[in-house]
Image (cartoon, rainbow, N blue to C red):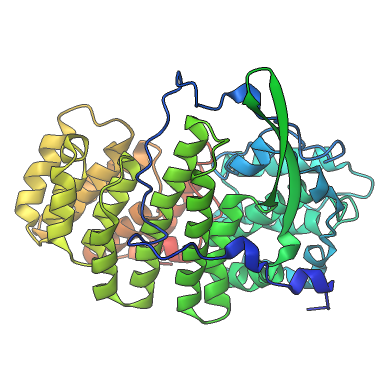
Length: 460
């Protein structure tokens, strides 16, 4: 990589300095209660300025810069709350070099799923190109979106000072590469960000606060200019790129220290405090997941037990899934007991499957499907089919999976499992798998699944 400004390589030591020794770790949820909204000490929304990143931040200069489904970039609390117009002076040209981004091909994509890569024409505006990118993401063409994101990042349409647009395009690129099975490319490309804890990625910003009724004051702090979702994603990708699994743990803990520090800021209101609290819970789960990827299951079990139960149902569910993944059935059951919502969901029969009790799990899946299960029905039906397969009821399992395909479902594990059953019970499984691919390619979707499927999804 070409040399960059000296300031970009200096570690921002003061920003990641460790607090004094405490009995709590950086990923533990703070015990500070949220201040009641009617408390006289509670900061109000009107006390904090919420301007845009800059006056000329480009076509995506809005409060939610990349409103794309399902890869919508989370509204970063720092960018939303403080004036970071100083970030517009940053030169991000080191992220716009063509040699950073790997060329993509569709050789691993079955012919029925292939679509032409879109290349912006000469003279086309950035707005037109972004409309195409939005449509690709909304339709689920993640490989095409990864290609277009790189094309835009390396095009003359992007200003090197357009911080918001560059980081959003980079996040889209890396996330789409992961979703399409190109994680190794994403890992190598993430190295271009270099050290995200360097002083280069911080800016000093002023913001107004109301210290006393009728009096206004200004405070000055340093803030990170990279959106939080991209920082979290880069931690894992860079650890893969540098072949150092411990780097992922270290990076998550550094983010944890920062999240705890931001949570304790007196200028935050309850909504913003809850955002940082949820982020801490998320980082804890990711740290356990990183330990699982390292193969250190004992440390993963200990870390999972030390996390405690988050108030967030989604994080509780992830904790149960991780416990099942590492074989810690005791922790999984303890977490389930603490939530009546989770007990009535899909995690209870999943726990039975983890124990190898497929007959018991079959009964539980059927009972669950008799009630209102909502969007989790396809997952429940597929897991019921897997239980039937393990109990020797091959035809019933195949019928259930084919019914899901007929109902316009085609997620990766579904097509893979159905292709496996075709190999077990059909004389000419390849023709059936090709027919399955044709059916899936003709389905309509709303961006909830990847349409640029690979041969491996159908075992071709």
